[in-house]
Image (cartoon, rainbow, N blue to C red; front, side):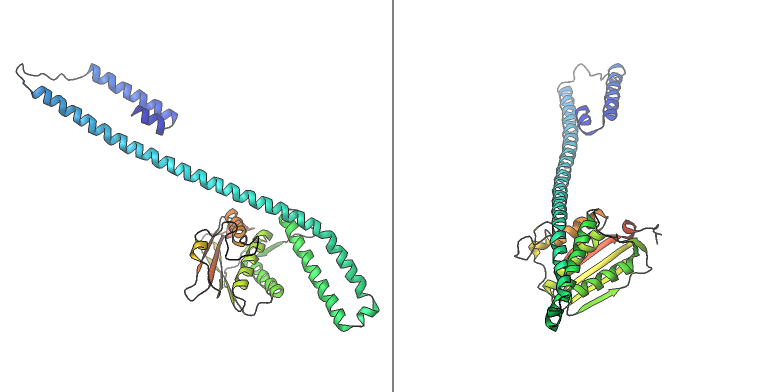
Length: 320
């Protein structure tokens, strides 16, 4: 028992156990009750001795099995915890590396984008080009796409703490999701989007660039899988924000569902695919939320994102 205590218990508890067992040993030595046997006991004394040994053996065996099993469970739980921490550390390292690469790429893209923008402005002032309506429209469209590229670069730098312009200010849950979906529809022009925002009562939050981009990646995945229909809903469940994205595509294979949220786990064949849900899972996890992916009974995929309002809130959240 002392050995098991030294393995399982804290230092102070182990020394307490040593003191208690030592006191019990002294107590039994000094204040024992003698067992008086008759002179003609025959085999009774031997039988009594064997019975006592058997009882001691059973007690010792039961205690050893109980505590050793507990030790094994603790070791298994510790190993599982360490493995989870190593996995989380590797994933966070990958996110940091991707962030550094994205930040570096955004810096490098700034110069060529500016150069192209200047050239387009010069072309727009050239009468011979403006005389052709088709070319003028193309130049205008190119300028719009350049502005969008600059906006994307600004978002990348803003999410890494190097904003090019003004940072997003305070907003509310309803405005945050409404603006995100509206911007996504303007940029992607999906055929049919069923969007409902039933979050009430509304709550003031801080706009999170990384969260917004991660959610947009999920919308892009749904649109790619189901170009003709995407369903988006936002609602409040207790003190959580729940956003659900549905599509009518082929769905998610069981093998991918089992490892959802891991990097490079995807049904796509393009290099570098499989990072959308991975990035979303990491961003949401840091905010104390969760991501659940599955398949709809009528066909297609379904991704639900649950976020605590308090993680984005700029004011106290009243429970209830």
